[in-house]
Amino acid sequence: MKTIHTRVITFSPTHTSLKIARAVARGCQAAPAEELDLTCRQLRDTVRLGSDCLAVIAVPVYAGRVAPLALQRLKNVRGEQTPAVLLVVYGNRDYEDALVELRDAMTSQGFVPVAAGAFVGEHSYSRPGMPIAEGRPDEADLLLAEEFGRSARHKLDAAGGVEALAPFYIKGNVPYREVGKPTPQAPVWHEDNCTGCGTCVDCCPTMSIRMTDEGEVQTEPSTCIKCCACVKACPAGALTFDTPYTAMLHAKFSARREPEEFM
Image 1: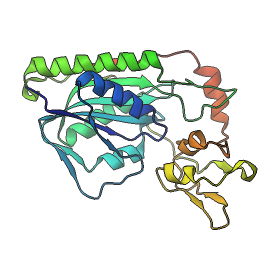
Image 2 (image 1 turned 90 degrees about the vertical axis):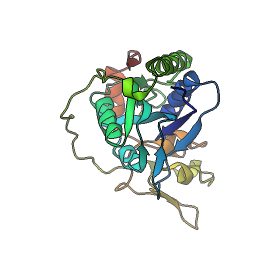
Image 3 (image 1 turned 90 degrees about the horizontal axis):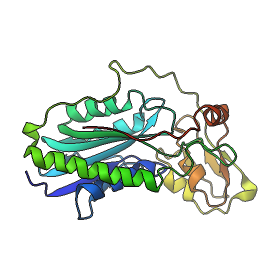
Image 4 (image 1 turned 180 degrees about the vertical axis):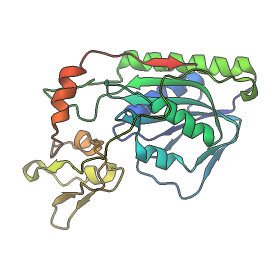
């Protein structure tokens, strides 16, 4: 089988999943891949991918599961016996059942897994003084991701088609781990630092941030998913997200973890 093109499909508020997906796609083919970024986009119409496409699908892990909004945004992406490389990116604690959950979701939507990987990205709660996987994915991660993409492409080409691909082991459990009810919270705005650039409004996946006519930035805890995209994107440091989990994660999960690959 000759794959015509690669399609990168991501939900990536802080761009860590996107970086890994792009590196994997580079390994899958020489030509630049088409990209479908679902971070701030809810598809109105179904996007269908055929068997002549290799999908690279990457999402973040929240509490050992696929980020719920990522699964929701992916529902209108459908395959037709479409080969796929499945990727989850977690903040150096654990990805637990997220990769199995992504496999099950995408298989039910017409995709055929070729390979699956769990990579590390800087945790959303990481901050100066209490880093958690700061700066990841780094150069070493991206090189591994690219090599992983080459291996996945070689496996697909050697098989000659998705019909010849056998199911393979992916770490995780079914039923998936239970996740507690989230506590509403949103980043805090610091007026003295704010320049009114609007970056936070533009990068919020749930439109939970608005700027009033008077220039006040308002955040909505009930719809915030705590991705901290706004905190990391603000050029003036005008938004902060304070949680005791930052100190705990920094204390317990600072040791470097490496990617895990399955195929």
